[in-house]
Image (cartoon, rainbow, N blue to C red):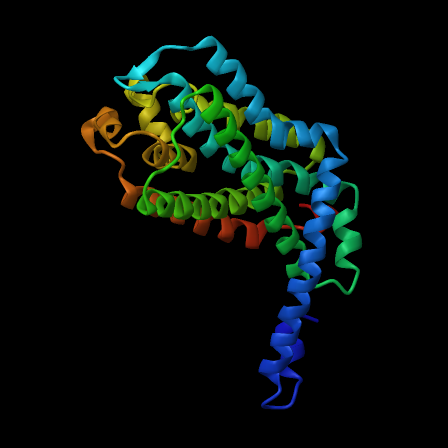
Amino acid sequence: MSLSTAAALIPEGQGHSFEARAWRRALRIGGLRIAIELKELVRNPMALMFTVLFPLILFIIFVSVFTGHVAPGVNFSQYFAAGMIASGAFYAGFQNLAIAVPIERDNRTLKRLRGTPMPPAAYFIGKTGAVIAVYVVQVALLIGLGSLFGDLQLPGTAGRWLTFAWVSVLGLTATSLCGLAVSGLIRRSEGAAAIVSPVVVVLQFISGVFFQYGSLPGWMHDIASVFPLRWLALGMRSVFLPARFAAFEPGGHGWQHGVTALVLAAWAVIGFAVAARRFRWSNEHRG
């Protein structure tokens, strides 16, 4: 019985309080699920490596190899740090969920959870909380490394911090919902990493994470502009790079905050629609 069905059986005037208690219960259990999710991540060296540490390893490797400037007053390490912070949201949200959820479905973790009194919302609260925690840790470590070894400058105005906040929130929302959507499309967990990881790497290459976006071919711009990572990277460059660097963005369009918000919001809607339709708690009724 769903919460809405149960609420319909409650006498008039008590339905709202019932739903409020149900949501408080889901939030309380969801908070406990966050701790469980993080413990499982820490105890899984492979997941910890690719979800949390991989962006840091890539940062160290790339800034050690590429030491030049991408524009006057902006060296490669500054540019790359901004791109890897954007990638952190992609790793924490999309890659993490698109791989982990099919594994939990195949090993029957989801089926067992669905059979408990735990509200389904608590599961997604736990996943969301873990994604946010991982992203915060990634950003803190990348900013630390970028400041120490890459001349990365922290935003000096409230406006830039506000931009960082809304780009992060929209980016995590879009990538997480897309990760849940893809998890419902993957039939077997054995193939999840083989499907998801190459997609993430390719998008990093064409979205201006590994190389300056303006130096990439136009056809790469056309493809990358469809996907959220290109706009996440652009948003983070607007936060961590000097304002004058906007002139080096393709087409001379600057930071395009409005387009960034629209694209990320659109992907959040698409991800939610697909996830709501295709998310499965077990593989027993696959077509």
